[in-house]
Image (tube, rainbow, N blue to C red; front, side, top):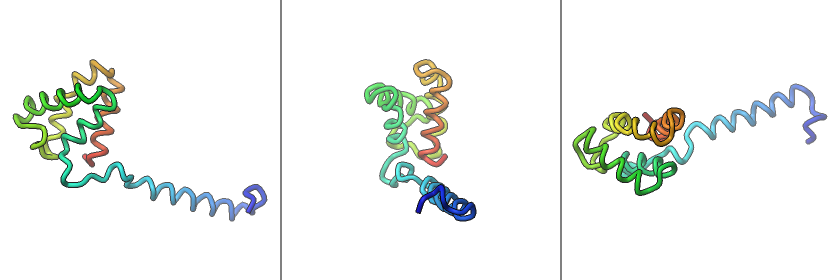
Length: 114
C-alpha cells in the first residue's frame, strides 16, 4: 500500500500503530534486563569500561567500593550502588567532563533500574 495515496485516517492509524510498537519495544530493552547472578558492581564496571577501559574501570570500582561501602565490589547490593556512583563522581568528572560523567551515571542508573 502506497503511503502517499492512503486516506488521511488510514495514514494516522498506520503511524499510531508504528509508534505504539516502537514505544512498546523501547519500554524494557534486553540490555536493561539483568539476571540476579550478575552483581550490580559488575554492571557498573562494564559500563565504565566502555569509556575508561577495562583496567581503569575495574580498579576504580574496586577502590571506590572499599571507600564508600567498605566491601568488595562483588558483595555490593543494589542499595549500595548510589553511594558507589557518588564516590566515582569526581574521577568521572575529571576524566570525562561534567556532561560525560552525568551521562555515564544516568546510563548506569537506568540499566540497574535505580
